[in-house]
Length: 325
Image 1 (cartoon, rainbow, N blue to C red):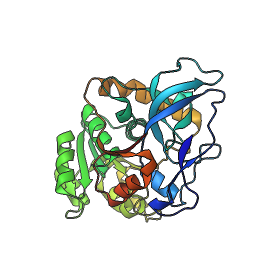
Image 2 (cartoon, one colour; image 1 turned 135 degrees about the horizontal axis):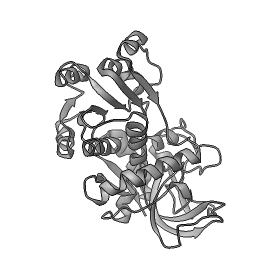
Image 3 (spheres, one colour; image 1 turned 90 degrees about the vertical axis):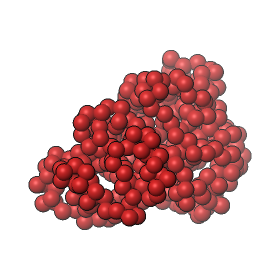
Image 4 (cartoon, rainbow, N blue to C red; image 1 turned 90 degrees about the horizontal axis):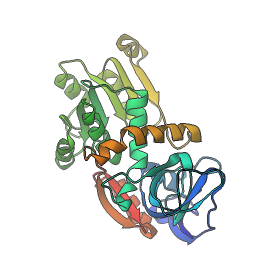
């Protein structure tokens, strides 16, 4: 088969479409013929040499895919050859075939075509696990998501609105903020022109956000804590703004607030399976009913993954960028 390889870390040009050995499913695994994958910022970090895949997983980038089951390993039940599926991966989505642990496999939701389904596994698993399973966002609470027009952001807006939360977003342009409004965002903050701490406090009469989903890390750490309401929860899922920040413990104590930081890729298989099962139970019906939808900005041939990486680096997109075969 062919896959996107990374012979040497570097810029987008480091991505090479090359012939590689065919994968073989083992115990509790299925082989998926990949129709599409999606580009995530973690893939850019891997390309740059900063985010290696977990031991034993595929060396190729790609944290999610959609396709058809072509082989089934020992011990697998509930799936058959020919099933159309999408999957959460530890790596290997930028390839013609990938082996998937059965617990990370999902059916394509009702009303979604197979290519578009590749935009779903990573964002739904990330948002559901952090915003709902860990941070316990509840109806009537205020939720702030940074990067509201991103793949994560567009999914987070819709899921938070679906449970009855008030949604605030940050984004860097009027076009992106307008799109967030169309998805249901209530509070729109242009981070290039406005201070999100002041805007959140103004919009909530000084109370702050009950839950914040943050992709920036160090750069926003102190300001996020300032923006939290009493008993607020800050969930950090990215490091775009650096890895080392200063935290005012007194502010955290006074607010009785919590800060969590998680990554999805390195979790044990049983944890991923639990998250995927929760996504299937809670998110898939919302998608099937048309209340939530994946947002796809564009598709790019998989062999030209470098072009897709450049799009993410420019941050000119809204939603997800897909790689298609």
